[in-house]
Amino acid sequence: MTAPTLEYAELAPLITVFGAAVIGVLIEAFVPRRARHTVQVVLALLALVASLVQVIALAGTEVVAAVGAVVIDGPALFLQGTILVLSIISIAFFAERKLEAGGDAFAPAASSLPGSDEERVLVRERRLQTEIYPLMLFAVAGMMLFPAANDLLIMFIALEVLSLPLYLMCGMARRRRLLSHEAALKYFLLGAFSSAVFLFGSAFVYGFAGSLRFSEISTALTTEIGKEGLLLSGVGLMAVGLLFKVGAVPFHAWTPDVYQGAPTPVTAFMAACTKLAAFGAMVRLFYVAFGGVRSDWQPMLWAVAIATMVVGAVVALTQTDIKRMLAYSSIAHAGFVLTALVAADQTATAAILFYLATYGIATLGAFAVVTLVRDSGGEATHLSKWAGLGKRSPIVAGTFALFLLAFAGIPMTSGFVGKLSVFAAAIDGGATPLVIVGVLASAVAAFFYVRVIVLMFFSAPAEEGPTVAVPSVWTTVGISLGAAATLLLGLVPGPLLDLAQQAAVFVR
Image (cartoon, rainbow, N blue to C red; front, side):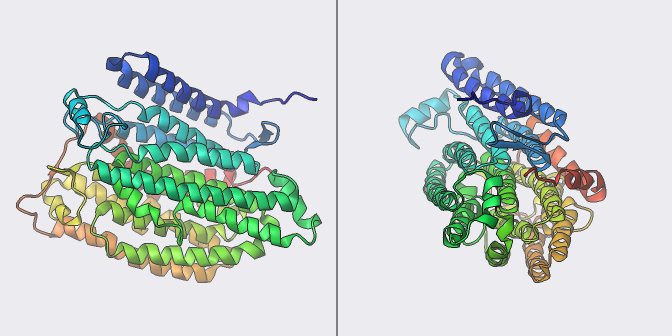
């Protein structure tokens, strides 16, 4: 019996984040409460930065590691690096304390009942939530492993590692606790069902191929005859589990409720990073393992992409809450990514990588701006509260307008280049009808983005309108980086496009 070997250098980014998450749990047990918040923030930042440096050092590496279970290649490293950059910015939003009197965006103790005497005492003592940081690190580690998984078992484990902390984090809002708990429960129940469906599909695929390894599944597509029913059933069920994670129609029902109820820093982190990890895993699974039966799964993705773009754009028109509007916007964007995924080639992979990076940056910035507009109840998320915001705070309103224009795909923003790249890849892959639907959906989406901009700059402010809070350096730097990247990648997208093109080659 041969002992397994692990490529520690290639797995170092993952090990660093997992190790820091475990240390974060120990900090909760042994570090005095007074110093715990500072220690957790410093640990999380150091771990994420160190992991990012290790990912950069691995650039160009192509190796199948961990006895074939994990692959380190261009797409995996690109997505891991992007997830780490977005996570570092997310830590800044998590650590923001000036927006809430005596605390941050999270309940002082997740286990306390909303409105209970225990919670009032904790609020009065200005107790800070610190468990959120190791939970986030576990989620980041799962997100990094998800697109690098090279067999179905590791992919399922990564799915659960990234999902379970998010279920908890969604229920930790300091304000509107019951809404937050409802969001967490819905996400948990629906997420558990989707994970079970994914696992059930994996069992079907294993029954077809006799292996969990992607390369061996791909080989079995040409050698196994008479088991096509098992294979196609497995592909469909696994697609359901992954489409749930990206918020695609008809598996999107959780998205608006969870985005609205979760603490806004968690919503930003989840909206930006989970979509990257899930699409990365989906592209690897369908291109590497199921590439030989693309003619069977492409029609399914065509239908899902069309429904996702149409439903996301049309239903967003009816929303009156800014977070729900951004949730339906994210659904539409998932449809745009799916238009490129059906092309199933290197150009499509590069377009998807670029789109996910630019969308993630703009999403973090947009939700961070949402945290600044406040009234006596906390964040003022109803659209009517945003009327005249441009007169009260032109910088905040202008920054939010920039992110909305990027979502709409207006030229000179990163969103325009991203949409252009995925639509061009879809046309090259023979999916021109999808592009037509995408352009029409983009036009509809542009209407509700512009509606918010008009509301902010050309409507009279309410007499008792919300205030625009002055954030600390944490949030200020995060929003500034997001706005600068959105503009820069719209004006000079070449370097990131070239990097995505070089990274778009899978090791099989």
